[in-house]
Length: 212
Image 1 (cartoon, rainbow, N blue to C red):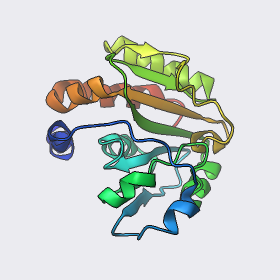
Image 2: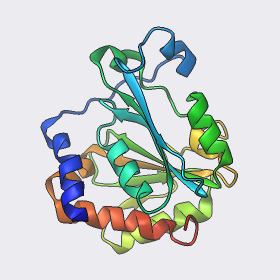
Image 3: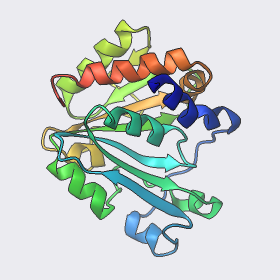
Image 4: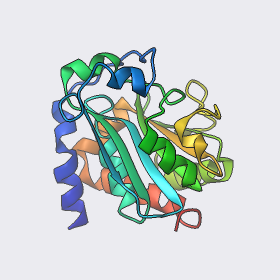
């Protein structure tokens, strides 16, 4: 049953193209002043009072599939937050970089979490997960778990290290982990349900002992 749910949630990605969208020069409040909630963007969240939270701050039409992965991971027991762009207008300034992402509900959830796992997509020709963030023990656990199941990783992530204290993931008490999944790998996860399930299990295994 779980495999079927993953397939139904993820199939759309293979039909969509992904292009690197420039970072917005503003923060959430600047974005919200010229965009309409429910028309240009929406927020999904499920606060379970858990020690860890799964974030997708570039969800919807931005980094497609990240909100699906975050939600799937949260089913194991983590809190869930996704900021989703749902219109073409929202795409223009919707990619608010993680160091400027100050949507109040996200900040509240991050600051009361012990750790945050933030899912992203990066434009990269490699088939890889670039692991960053300030929570080093948890990041290393992700590297071990992903490698054990055959996924290639780079740690620390050179191009997108995610180590700024202002990064939304690092507002957590113990800091966070930023998972930058290459477009090439995301497309493989979409086309191969068994690989997608293996990836999800790797993420859950990595968080075991830290989050539940």
